[in-house]
Image (tube, rainbow, N blue to C red):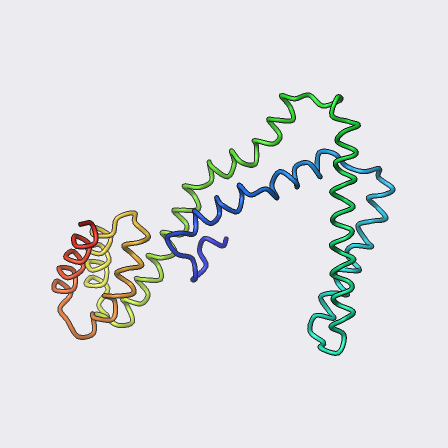
Length: 197
């Protein structure tokens, strides 16, 4: 859903991939594989939620800044203890793991992510084209046939490139008010060829 947000750019997919290949992914996997006793889980989760909620409430009140700092320290300490506890549980239980099944369960989210990249890209591309075409309809010709023809000409030039769509939107869309559309397209083509040199 974030791929259709207005502030995404051509580096959005790279950011998603970078976020999903950080060290935290391995830590989260270990914490979900080597879990604590159910009683410990049932007691610790509500406590952490209450402390987090209190910290978020105190964040907006300057007079309680020291209390919020203390709660953040407690949350950090709990996080550290959970990581240490997970490592201890992992050391005791690693012999019970089937290495192949564990590897497969670790790789499934990454494979899903890689397979979903084209869908994210197409959603983002569709969003950028939609945004561009709406802007073009406000600043340009009001007749539908002319709008569709112009949209087709822009699509022929930009094709499946988010970078090109954003470039046209930022630098050439507003020129529709003052210049001929064919002149704008020629300038756009010139800029693309200069960019490729």
